Image (tube, rainbow, N blue to C red; front, side, top):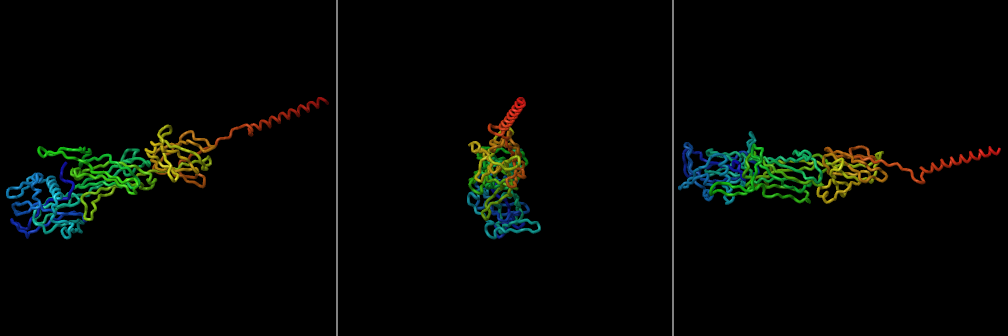
Length: 518
């Protein structure tokens, strides 16, 4: 991978010259400046003089440099001597390629050395008056300028990202801030299609899968991905990280260790994707999840690369039911070094939404009057299938049971009180309600009753104790008819009829006998 936009710094190498057309020597009265175009207010810009310019000739293009005293140690290192040669008189000559990649790599190791060895910049925007910011109202561009610089070879650093600019303007040099603002795009997976988008539906207690794409810009440094779980999610878990080189659709496989260099310079380096992952405990109102990318990883990044982070989190019982843009999950990236106020540069924010729904189970007789005493279980199939477990909450409603609650056998039957009961935290889908206990005197359903959740609650409405309208899951029970029994009206009628017949026969017999006597 190219090293043009090396992470961990915002920098440029700038050659500063005097106004003179002919050569000069040791003229301390000739001063120059460096203008940085495209700066951002609030960021820190600093400048270091690596080499002193002894003399030059514009016409012939000849320049004489010697190492600045503060940088003697750096130019004695093997890393520096890959790019420059220093003769016996102390004059410095550039020997490496002059492409942007090579210059950026040299600038990176120089700045790393400066920070590791406490080399102080000659000017800094942290000091009043040393870096003057101006805005051009016609072009709406912002630039900053370092003035009164002794002529030399300069390194410009910022807390944002790599400038990667080289210029030879006399005596005023200018570089353009080519580092761009990295962006992020967060998506969430819909489990019914396994496709990622801006929103999804899920059960409470379900593991929800996300991925966030980081669109890399030049100068990647100190990338930290932040995810605000809030109260709606918990138990975040990193799944994997993929790196896509600019223009490629195949992710790069990053080994745990890698051998770099040749011959005596060969060494094994550790490549790690992140330093740490931290998640706030579930008991907090605000939970956060961060992925911190290590320097070794950021050093590999170039502009237009993409880093895709896959992770998951559990939708909690605190989830909002149904509402618009409910259960947001927000991601952003911080990068660079701290600004003057101690904060970090921040990318855009990207948000996904997760929806979960509720149903009203309504129990009535054939006249839509509410009745009590029924018990139900929910399944995902008309016959057999898996139970969709629920647990009873303190407010008398039921919520979707988590997998661990189902495994522990904590799921319960849904008991109808006052003719209705609410169940929350259900995903889109087709469900089946099975009546396990019928109200006293009513016939139990002989088959499961189907209902469908499709991007909305199944809410019921009532007028007093009568179910009126709405889309609740309405279950009707009918009473059975009373069968005949001993001592009841069913046998009495036979006794009465029999008695009448016997009485009639007696009357007829007596009348016949009287007629015979006569």
